Image 1 (tube, rainbow, N blue to C red):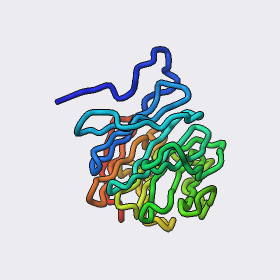
Image 2 (cartoon, rainbow, N blue to C red; image 1 turned 180 degrees about the horizontal axis):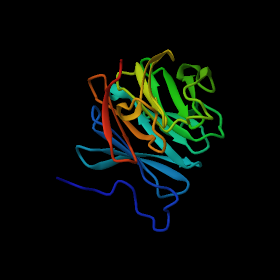
Image 3 (cartoon, one colour; image 1 turned 90 degrees about the vertical axis):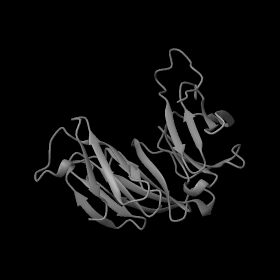
Image 4 (cartoon, rainbow, N blue to C red; image 1 turned 30 degrees about the vertical axis):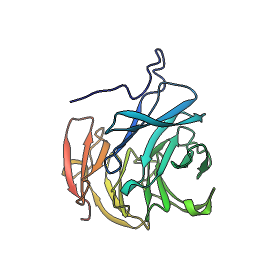
Length: 227
């Protein structure tokens, strides 16, 4: 067992909690928080040393997502609703994939061979952006969950880059990378929707099409993500 301080401690900065993302393939860890402007610290987990930093991010960081298969790509999602794309070979420069959005970013992921980005927002909207355009290029914008009856509460993507899941207090939905709804499940397998028991966390199995869902009621369920 081992431990190290991934983010320098700054007392009184509770407003900016720690955000952690790891990539087992590249043995890298990305950590941010506890500072303003915010910095992403890049760690080599095998050597336990900080190998680089992404600095000067003016907005609070909500999410970090690293590319699969060890590709040098990193997504940074901010509280402004904007999403920044970094090529880690030159992290001084970035591509702003989305304009600021007034709804909270729930999650994001790279899809379609890491060429596109899908993002989910609290109002239930799902948006797809194309990295190859080199800037603001929204490919698709559609409703994942009803913004009035059931807002989006969590988001997760499979490392294969072809499917992702979203959830609300009433349902768990599985989508493919083209935006087609593959399946819909109820939280914890209930026949009737539950009130006050929304799914707060979704996580995919790294190699199988299984997704785990958990909420504030301390229950965890595992679903087959394709049916």
